[in-house]
Image (tube, chains in turn cyan, green):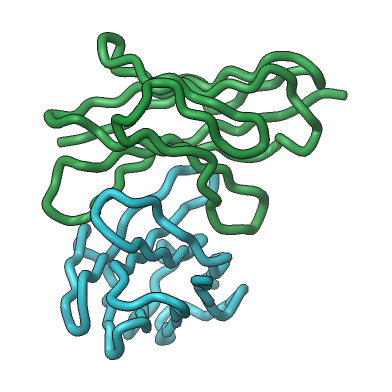
Length: 112
Length: 114
């Protein structure tokens, strides 16, 4: 069966520090991969999606970047965190077009 | 562009009462529609999905949703609420783009009163 791993579960970082969140998927090949952010009390905002290795599309211009160095690995990064980067970050995968998304357990990021 | 609205950011029901969570969508193509549930500090779990096979869709945990094209709605219902149903519920739509861009509604927080 397919599983998705996302870490760390919680993270507290000072303003201006770098960020690296990692997500890996097991049990499937060539998944579509996504990063979402969920601000407190708000819905989900799609940040990045990827349909293959090295193929990253950004939905909103911001202080973050994403990379997909391997088929089932998706990394969210920042060189310098802002206070506004605080939130709940969710990684997800899907198997084919218009299929449901499968989410990781999320990373709670607090920028202080 | 596709969009989703969910009427009511907070809904409270008594245990055993009917649960009705509203979702309306806009789409220029036949949509794929989903309901997800999120428990505190967790990711989202799929409750059910509509993919044009049947207008009444049954999901997990006793939930179901009905697709009404004329009303552009996909409301979620459950006949009898349980305490364990307390969570955040998200409606989502996809299908308009050539890639899997899923648009989520703002969510509805469901409280169940004992």
